Structure formats: C-alpha cells, structure tokens
Image (cartoon, rainbow, N blue to C red; front, top):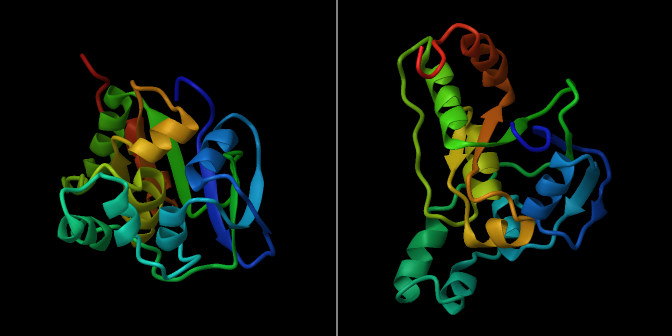
Length: 194
C-alpha cells in the first residue's frame, strides 16, 4: 500500500461498543493507526450487511435517488453480500501480524491486479469481480470474502464520501485462509513489465 497500513477485521465474541462512525470510516481510521472493538456502527446499509439488523435497505436506496424505481432499488439491495452469521463484535485494527478474518487493502489498480494474479497463480481460477458500486467496503470487500474468495471494489458513494480514500485506489478484501498463499505467490509471479 502506498498510504497507510492494511486493516485487519476480526469477528469476535468479545463485548464491543456502539460506534456512530460508519464501518468504512472505521476501516479508514484503522488504516492510519486507530483500533476499534465495535458492536454496532453508524451506517444503515452496513448494519444490514454486517448482520446488526435485518432491515432490508431497499427503501433507503430508493429514496436516495440512486435507482430509477423501487424495483431497481430492491434488486440492488437483494444483490448485496451479507454476513451469513453475525459475531458479537468486530475488531478493526491496523494489521500487525495477528489473526484476522479479512485483510483490507487500499491499492492502486496495478497492485490490485497483482493480488488477482497471485490468487490465480496456483489454480488459474480468476477472481470474481462483481459490484454494484454500493456497500463497497462492507459488502464487496468484507462480507463477500467471508465466503473464502478475494473481493475487489471500485468503491461506493458512501465510502468515498465519508472515508475519503484516494480516487486512484481500489479496495481489496482478502480472507485469512487465502492470505498466506497469496503472499507466497506474490514472490513468485513476474513483476509488471518483467
């Protein structure tokens, strides 16, 4: 990463606190050195995706003007990745070598491409890139990787507005079970231009 540190996300049964910050804001703050143990965060869509609530965000998306009609908003909300099981709290911290469920990286596109290539190194399988430009950090890069696959997102209006990561950055979420093999493969695949 050119700016900040990778962020470790760990779902835990510890007792966290409620936070008024949005999940993406907490991730950005952790990227630059802060740590959190939260039970809930301040985003309505994030609350649905992270299993804090069962309130389906169809109406929120419709009234936000992001979709042409209520059916499109419902379809968008239906396509969000969501945690299958909710832990009591989420530990969010700059990565320091400890355990994590998801590792979040803010990368320039070329570096994200290398993560994809490293993932494909052993099997040749591509990384599925599927996003609606909504719920980027919580859904695309946290909930989806909990299925055991890397997640990549170009971002969303909320995460770019509230956490202000760079226009030159994409977000990559790597599940714990793939991190070691991706790290090893990064040392074996050719560099860009090589």
